[in-house]
Image (tube, rainbow, N blue to C red):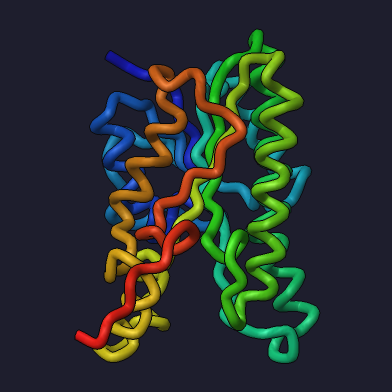
Length: 247
C-alpha cells in the first residue's frame, strides 16, 4: 500500500543513498531532487528532477511543475545541505554565505513552496529537516554551520506553529557526526575515527541508517501528532555526559 508521494531534496548526497531505498521499501513513491544529474546507481522507479532549491525561484518552479503534473508531494524530506569545519577567523565571506545558502536558504525556500502547494490541495502533509548537534551544543570550529542549523531549528518550530491549522507537520532530526562518505575527509584514518567517536557517550559515530529511519518516521502518516520537534540522533551527545573513570 502506497504511503503517498515523498519529495527528497539533496538526492545525490550520502544520506540520500540510504534514505531513498528505505523510503521505497516503506511504500513511498519517491520524487528525488538534486542540482546535478541523477547518480549512475539511482534506484529504479524514482522520478528525478533538477533544481537548486537554495534559490526561491527554482524552488517555486519545482513545485509548480509538480502541481501541473498532479504530483504534489504528501511529504518532504529535506536533505540538501553542506558542512563547513572552520572557525570565525578561517571562514571567508563566500564560505559563510555558501554555508547559509546550502543549509538555511534551501530549507526556507523549499518549505515555503511545499506549504503553499499543500495548502492549494487542501492542507495536510509533513516535512522534516536535518539539523546538527552543533545547533544545541557549542562545538569548536563550527560557527557558520551552527548559525545555519540554529536558524533552521528556529524556522521549524515557527513554521510548525503557523501551519498547525493547515494540518501540516514540521520537524527536524539533529544528527551527530554520521559515518558516511560525506564525512570521509574528517574520518580519513583510524586515529581520527577513534577521536571523533570518543566525543559521543555511546562511543561511536552515528549510522546514516538510523538518521534516515528517524526522518521517515517523522513524515509517516501514522505519526500524525508529532510536530515542532527537534529529535536528536546523536548517541547522547546533546543530553548526557558519561562517567569518566581511570579504567
